[in-house]
Image (cartoon, rainbow over all chains, first blue to last red; front, side):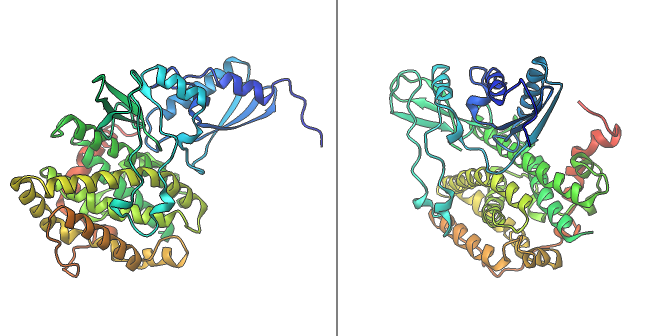
Length: 176
Length: 250
């Protein structure tokens, strides 16, 4: 069977979604964040976008869903269906390299590029065999001498750190 | 009621009642970091509640969505364990309750990742990283409080002794839990309990806290809807708006 004729391509939709900002961190897009998992074009006016939540209680998810739908409607897609996909669970590994740079320039330390190894905890949760704490560089002066100030920060996805060299407190986008 | 629906409601009710309790610390935490942590954990649990309720409502097929399930049931219809409705008390009480719950929750959710029900496995997979973060934090806090000053040690030991009798209900499986074990969904109680005792023992040793007897008599009844008076006050506050103005929306 031939694919239905369509002048809107998935690439075009990805590009449009690349202009939809994260409501909490406006310098990165929902595509940079890695929460858009799939795009399917049904015809000129209809598409399906699969998104995955960052944290199950993230209050921004509804705002993000509305922003995605609104942006695509603005480009003429009358019917935008959003599919909420839980598995595989979102991980900060899906954040784009461009997104990491934008975060750092904005003053938020990007997530360390290793997720918590859950499979390594199978025999129990041995405190002393937990993965080492991430090494977080100060986004302002670049110093690796930083210290965790609070395990939670201004949004569910961030923790608070402080730099021991330039003394600045800063947000760290938690590795998840 | 269908066993699976019942089981999903228990999962959701545990998360919702603890979430509601933690949210009451908002603006009153002993330090800004603690305030943010408790409310963020509360938010994670609320998100997980919605996922469990949503699935329960779909399976039940009676037209109840997550809000109806949360706001339009009376105390005897709630299936949360008694531990979670115990008062916030002082900070040692709150953190001990959290640590007992987080340890069980971590091993439970890890087991549910392999459930023979794809939707349950997906929700568990989504929750696991959050739950792991919660457990690390509450274990750290128990060590800091237990191995802290003479006052913090005494208060934490008192909290452990008071709350211990509520720690065993999660392992007291009834016909509903057993049906979920048989269906390849829930992990067996003895396996969860062994992990729980091991981890709690390890943290207590580091925290210089005395561990009460594992075979002590345990309170139960919450899973069957038999609650303490505390739940009524929690629900009265949580449900007020929807009871007074049914269907009100933001």
